Image (cartoon, rainbow, N blue to C red):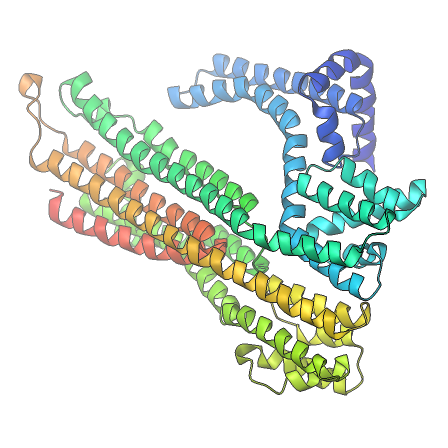
Length: 582
């Protein structure tokens, strides 16, 4: 409450001081429409004043940071970081305020368009049973399965409750400011068909068929975007990492005439590999996440396990370097044993994060794909039994007697609960307990509502079976097409490790003749080898995470590839150190 009062007080001050300039910024960047389309419940005038006010505060803080750096005079690396932070802070704050409405609008569009085939299928099935769209919106408001349409349904009932009016007018108003052109066309077509007395069922079924036909184009666009993300990451990580390595070794000869420790400062190399690459990988993973459809399963416990492992990962690292002598690197002592100890310590720390998470993900995802394939067969069996005239509830019971592979425990629990007289919705909740697949839960949600709300006619079950098959086919095509992208990070990680080690081995075995006859300082060779080795391992681990997210649609898949690539890079570096370092 106190926090809200402070924010409200700042808003009042900002509006009084910066009202006119804030409104000019909003109009210049066309944020007023973006704020409405993103469902940000803030007046554009207030938002513009916030931009100016918080940017000025950031400017004062940045000036203070630069002033402190000039007074304290730290080493060059810290000085550069402090000056850049002070200069970039107000720019970052201004950019965040400008881009936030656009990103929120894009997120709303992405969520709605990824769930629109399911929403259209649902209201098409309900329309067969004579259920209006307002009743379907009530269902979507309550279910947590559809994140995008849950927000749309909440906005629908909020406007309906505040301003009154009929549902069609409210729906038309929401669609008029919606960022998704596909959603606008769909809703406006529905409203016009209903008002003109057209065949609403035929309209909905035609649009659903159109959505599934467009799935191929949507998947192709998604795959192209993911390919661009992967290529961008590969080029930046490999070319950038190797380029910096070669640059610094060459600079050592050119500037000093001999490769002495005093002439080599690895700060930029360290920042690139241990700060720049993780930030780039985070951006790539976020970009892939926003591009991919929400066709996966919840893995919060896997992420929590990885975070916990990351917290305790310094312990095995310290244990390894204390045991192997790698700790001497912190004292400026660089030997072959120091390099091996540090390499092994970092590798063990990274494996401590990825290996348990991989095992947990594998256990959670075991049999999941087969489960999703068999759910379409189960719905087809239910549809076939419904055509024989059996009651809807009996169809679920009889269909469970057939073979459905890993789906058998789920459908048989459902059948047993229905036979005991338990409500179908409660029976579905009990049978789906522990099932993580979002697709399976959505399809069972559609099936249960087809009976409870739509009446469960044979036509409804036929539509449900057809839509389920289309959804599963699209999902399988997506996974099959993306599978090829998993090879690129393997090639990149191995190429980075092998190329860097071969380059350093050439430097060691056949050093260039330099002016003045100077030689290569052994301590600097060890130091450079250590930096290149740690960069290779970190690069391999991060590439594995990116590979899993892009090719497997999940960060959980990335833990598997990160573990494998880290082991490969560690073995390559171990061989290099043993064979080529003096």
